[in-house]
Length: 290
Picture 1 (cartoon, rainbow, N blue to C red):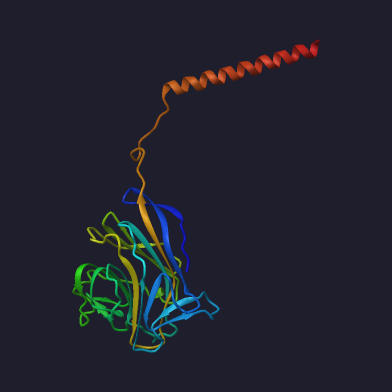
Picture 2 (spheres, rainbow, N blue to C red):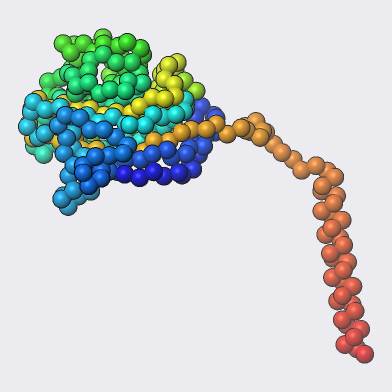
C-alpha cells in the first residue's frame, strides 16, 4: 500500500489533461494486523502472500456461496479522475464459474452486502459489472459480458440480472479468463468512459456516457459473488488519479510562423559571425608570414 504523486498526460475529447496519482493499492497492501489505511475489507476475502505469483487480494472463497468486498476509506476529491484496476479472473477448469465482480463509484460511506455481485442492490453512482455466470444472460447477451449502470437511486433487479438498469451489455471473449486484465474508469467533464484491456491487448473503449452526474468526494469499491466453486477473483492493484485540464496555448493545427523581424535578426547575426571568422583567419595568416 503506497501513496505516489506522479504526473502523466493524456488527451480526452481533444482536451489535454494532466494526471496526478492520489493513492494506490498494491496487494496485499495491508499492515501486519491485516488492515489497510486506504481500503476497508468486508465479508469473505483472503490476502494471498505465499503464492509464487504476485501477491493479491482474493474476494470470495473458492467454494460458494460466498461474497466479498472492499471500499476506499478516502474519497476522490476531484470531479475529473481516473481509476485503473488490475485484476484476474481465474478459471482453472472448463466447469469453473463465479457469479461476477462489480466495480463502483459512489458517495455511499458504508458497504452493505447484497445480491448485486456481492453488494446491496440499491445504489447511486456508477456500477460496472463483469458477469461470469455459466448460464447468465442480460438483454440477450451471454456471459462473460460487461455492463454499466449510472444514475441516482438505482435498484438492481436480481431476477433479470439487472436488465432494468444495465443497458446494452457487451459480450467479452473467453480469453478474459486466466489473463491479466485492466479496467479503466474515467470521469472527465461529467463524461464517463469505461475501457478494458485483457490478454495483453491495448485498451478497448466499451462505454462512453455523457452527463454521468458523478462529482467529487466519491468513494471507489469492488465486490464479488460466488455461488459455484473453484473460481477466483484476484485484485492485484488499484491506482487512482486526479485529472487536471491543461490550458491550450494555441488552437490545434494552428501554424506559428516566425516573424519576419526575427528572421532578419538571425541573418544579421550569421553575417557578423562569418565576418569575425574571416577577420581572425586573415589576421592569423599575416602573423604567420611575419
